Length: 437
Image 1 (tube, rainbow, N blue to C red):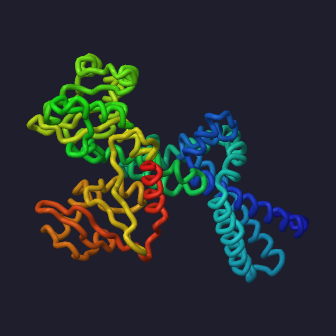
Image 2: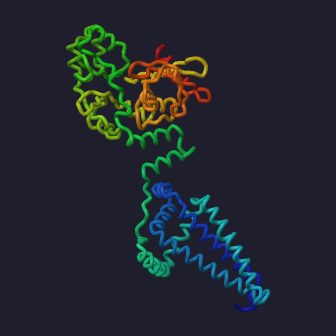
Image 3: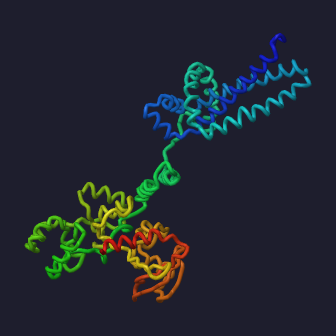
């Protein structure tokens, strides 16, 4: 280089090369760190920079080739320039000092700092950078194409296909993590509903059905006046109709269709039978996602769950499935309350027949749901015998005491809530008191 070139000009040119190196290093990190789903959302919304960025990332091998070409070119240029400046200032013995200083400057100011900033703010850096890289890629295409041809040839020898873009689709478990960690971007209630939808694939009608012993219905073999009292006092719209036993199901009747005749006092059994609809049966073990679709296709809202022998095991409704998604949302349900009452300071009595999933949802507990469906079943599985009243034990980190038992089951338990958040329990008790009033 001509010795007449001022040192100041050479230093300015070196600073420019270092800035270019920082640009290439930082934008590479930003482009590779972009959230592809957020980028796709912006691109579909008409953001021009996002559209260009997405097109560049369709072939990351070409983009990386361009970035590395530029980065290596400016770094080699900077190294050559430092050699010239060192010779001009201190002679040959100063070259190694200049090289050491350049290494330190590039490491801090052209690598670590810009890459850290880019990793923290990838969108703000990547989208403007894409507007620069797009024409650069067009201009340098022959060089980049040659480099990629050689590099991709070597990769193919190793069994790697650079032209096959890695799939960015998420599995159910990965999507669950994304939703759970969405934080303030998605309200807590919405996150809970989204996670509940993802959980439907792992749940069957057995998990949410009303057990046969809790089904409220019209028994045609019962005194007709008793049925009239049931129809007039119930808050449930669709009632099963059967003879003597739920296994002898006749159909389902909508109470709304009986209201007019009931008000006039002219409702008869014959009129009720004219209004019933044939029962709809589903096998136990049916997944909730399948059942929800079946309800829509069959235009039904109530189904009886049967076992392999055709015996009715329970009743499932669209409300039961939707409750798993959105939580409690109405009173017009076969579902009874959880039987929770206050039992002294920091203690509550709970009906042991309460459904575990319902307890988890309402009380915000984390009882295991992959085994028994009721609190009674969970305790019996834990201790493998019918305990005596007064027995104390820990179930899923909850301190409980057995209060009442029968020959075959636990009837009720006493929960010690010292150290536990009782807000949800108190809210449930208040709801039950309001409903009773």
